Length: 114
Image (cartoon, rainbow, N blue to C red):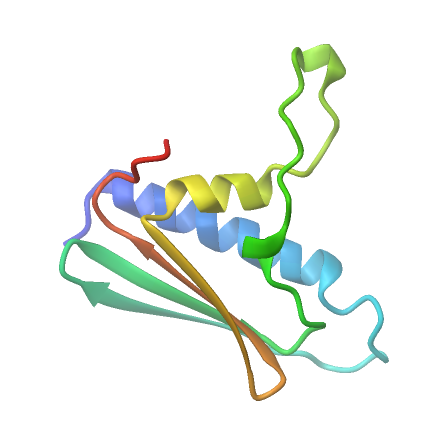
């Protein structure tokens, strides 16, 4: 029952979160199997996506965004995932629970910061 636009926003947020977890969350931990779980729940005007990982503590909402480059030639690779997540979500919340990072994103009515 979600619009294509909401599905696209959810997919982008999920992709960016999971890529960041895989790339950075386990760097300082001993080699082992790790878990990343995604739970999607309906809400009044869209969906809530809860992403849980057992990696190093990291609150992406505390991460300072780098200024955007003035031109494509000056742009660096990477660093836009958290910016995208913040802008595509209507609401973001982070907590550390039971040695896990838990990021909850709500995607509903178009965010006011796009």
